[in-house]
Length: 308
Length: 252
Image (tube, rainbow over all chains, first blue to last red; front, top):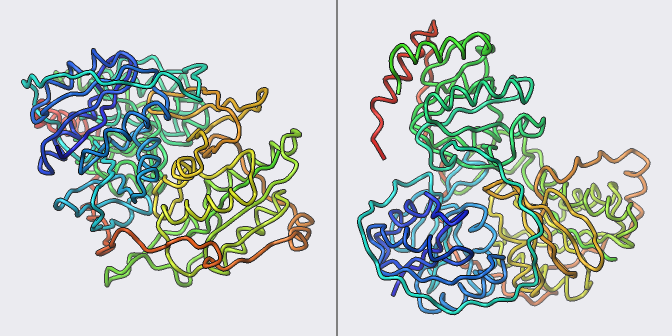
């Protein structure tokens, strides 16, 4: 037994990030996946399909930090690596797990160079740290956006394990964004909007273009702070890190904080009134002009070309 | 209630950093330093809890070189009552920092420990969670709202699917996200007053924590540079570029 991946899931579905983590760590050893939380059985059958998974472990419990950690800590003893995506759950659990095991974790990994050599960004992605981890066991979080997804078609066995029932923390309420757009962290195309949109109503222009391209929607910190977009759309150093094939940045000048979140984008399109905006200078294709005129025209034009 | 806030001095977040050509690290000599922005949100949260009658004493601790006194003074000017510098010139790993803070928690026995969710230099996002594990206290990370309700806290957290509100008992560890509040700029009289507030400087060795690094940093390198961009002249050209990219994408 070698690698234990903690699955990310939401509303009874496996998050797309987990397939990428499975693929990312495939070289490190045989992989077991742990699904801990509510509706864990449904999630487990999704996880069992991922190529490279040897076994899926299921612990059905109310998912809070302490119940998750209790399950993971017991299991961790028998694995050389414990890995989770660097999403909000992994970021919450893995450093705590590491401290309980008296290990130093390596987090936000964007490249795996060998069994104990990893690359992670620092200073909002403006520098990269190459690390050797000579500890006997490794606690890792991996940026899903930096890796491709594992294939499907597997049918790994599913095993139910004991889970604790009591937690000191109690979930009172969830406030989620109702949206049928693709998952932001793993989307192939992302359309992002900035403060230049001017209002939540105008931000719907971004949503229209995103819908047209079957893209996820991103926003800058300023746009989220101004109430134009929900917090879980924020892209940047403190929001989500994305690495789509195509990022379309609309009315976004390109603050360092935001650029940190999009460095992995393969191609960048910018629509901006300011030819000197940092994002315009980075873009593979930039169009200078008024976004309120350009976006409707662009949607019409894409309709004409039959895209996608 | 007693509140402990742990803060870090980092390269100012507006500075465009430079990676040393020899790969040994990021240049910090002659660069403007300031309090990590997330730590400022943590200090502000503590001061606001105090103003609402929930914080009789706010203690601020920082771990770092002598110069980190600056950020402690900033926190004292914002309204904290007492400061502590754990002095070291070494670059400590987050696990060592958390162990030192656990010693401070054992000494001070605060009801709430507030920290920034991450420092913008190493972007680790570890210390609050580690401290919770080491002190066996509940954690509420990435907080965008903190309310004292009965004998515990209700904390709204920023998570991947939106936000969630959890209730945790005290004593507890909370890490601050950026929408928690707007940190105040201390007025000049407060800055003057801060200099007369108690600030203890204690050598790191006093705490008896093994600070040996667990990881080896082989090198620090700059990220790959992007090829400079191109401008297109019209909407149809832009649409053609997007259509071309979309048609090349691998189906997932």
